Length: 153
Image (cartoon, rainbow, N blue to C red; front, top):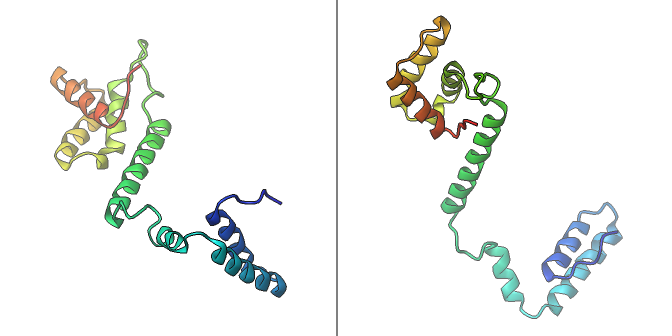
């Protein structure tokens, strides 16, 4: 059995879990314990407030969703970079080949503004024939690569 909770919330959480017991006696005992715990609480209104507004009411639902979405997107990006990075195709100097960068960008172009998509597809198509991009195309290609979190060792 785990240690006895030290906070009111912890004790109530433990008792609420007991309400789901398959044994009627445990359920009744848990309900009575909840009532005793609530009566013994110094400020039941403060507890009710924390239940209604778990974050203190400082964030709206939209703000919480925005934070969640940003965290989720960052996690997805980190995972994609880890598993679909360009480190599989490196030049002798340890830098990714332009082909690897172009294909990485093509796989991840949904993360960039649509105005970049045509360029990315054009350069990715050049990987088939091995046509080296111009210096200007290289700079643009790598700027998009870095924007998506790509790194060169």
